[in-house]
Image (tube, rainbow, N blue to C red; front, side):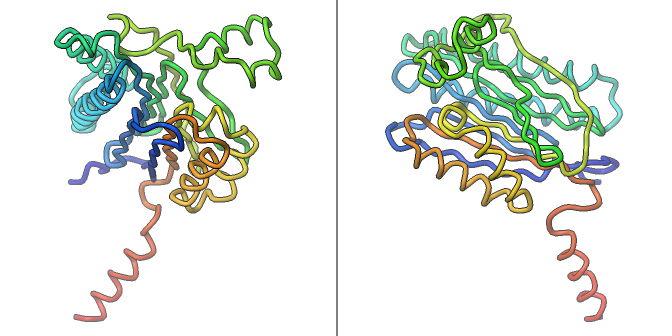
Length: 277
């Protein structure tokens, strides 16, 4: 029995991370597990290499926790719903961060943003904290589904600055929430319907700070059938526009479990094996 047994939908996903043109260290991390239906990006922060430690630790803990819970859920074990076990997995990762920070002075106050997508049967759970973003392309239109936890976003919401002023504001880098800074982080969670051929874009601010919404929409829509090439174009464009931060992109397309990339090749292979008997 495969991990996707009896699942109506699956993810086709690709991720790409680049340190950018100016940074010597990449403090971003990402994880993709299409067998268990999740993808995530994290943007670490902290002195020295603590940001790198934070993003990778959270990524590893979440990968282990979500894999175990999805397997149990699919096997019929009675568990809280997908929203609850996504929140539990993130709480576990947050505790791991706090515990690690207590072991070394140079890890003190380290933290990370998080953007997470979890596909369970016919529902998608989206969870984020910080300023890493989640977008969805549906019907040719790219929509931002997350809200930045940043001083700049707060100022925009309150009408204290204009959109034009926001583009040149230095406050965009002041993150107001992250994992690793409190025992009860303020998570943004939503559950949404699944539509086949939707494409989700998860990214760190190294992309969203530099690449306009319209350009992201154009690239993802035009290259929706070639997600690796779309990811490469997004990262390259961010670098061409300055690349002043680490750039991480995950693109995840929703497919029916019976279809997807490689389905035609599988049919041809079965026919060739039959003919070769």
